[in-house]
Amino acid sequence: MFPPSHHSAETVAWYKVGEPSRIDRATLRIAVAHLAAAAILVRHWPTPGSRQDAALALAGGLRRLGWTVEQIAVFIRAVANAAGDEETAKRATAAEFTERRRADGGTSTGWPTLAALIGEDAVACVTKWLERQLPPKHDREARREGGSEHKAPTQAQSLVSIAKSGGQFFHTPEGDAYASVRVNGHTENWPVRSEGFKDWLIHSFYDQCSRPPGSRRSVSSAEPSKRSLEASPAKKRAGSTIATTLRARQRDC
Image (cartoon, rainbow, N blue to C red; front, side, top):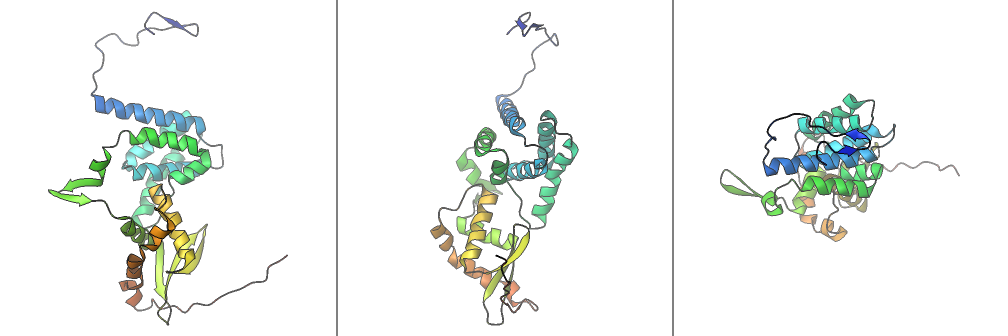
């Protein structure tokens, strides 16, 4: 359209007379990507009751893309406001909450949780738009710091890092290593070499990296690194020996 064209019975007019604003291509591409992602999120913003969960998951996903806390807060506030959310200020606090949780060594939700709330197709479109603004893959994986190449961590290193940040480790008087992890709001204790701990590790990897490990076998291939958890200094510190017991309760049929 071009003034004085008509659209929906309204006259299109110039908002301001003067020279068009100038903007470089990279900045324009980022702005378009953000606008497209926001439009998708506004269309699929959940109903009251799960909106704060959506804001937290969105904050976690954006933080893993390298966004700052301030950028995340502004973006979430704009999305919530356009979606008619009556608690935009509260939604914006998800950015700071997520950052504090990560700084304290805790885990945060991300794209998988958001997909469960607004749909996998919507999240796939959002991440596709947002990832268009990132540098090429080889640049992201090999950044230079101080003149030396900084390589991305291996999958085994990422798994061990997730385990250390999300679990509390101890050992029994017999020397068996255990991990205390949070699952659905409660604490579970699993032997480090158990299938239960492996399931938790796979889920945590998916939540933080927005993709599963290569396979369960690849998680098993991290066994040498997992042994480092069993031999960690935490195991040798005073007070880290805990006797384990098995508790059973009657099931009501």
